[in-house]
Image (cartoon, rainbow, N blue to C red):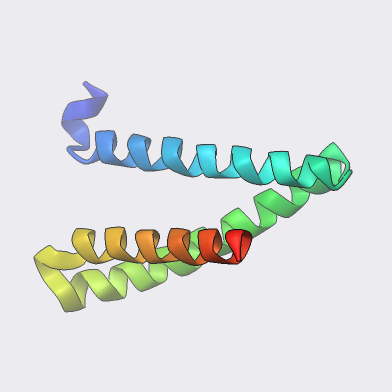
Length: 91
């Protein structure tokens, strides 16, 4: 019944899973630097909330501006961010 009330629930859950895996990797990195669990959770939580709010605002703007292409643009941005992170980590 919940899936019928929100047709995009599956996409939202998939996005949450992918982002959670990303946070898992960040947690591993913070652990190797000896950051405490509490400090890591506060850091990850604060940045995740801030970036989610920025993303919601930008996504709303881009959704109105780009129309049907907004999902593809979001995917492209995510790929570019991942490539930038990988380039910085490998370079």
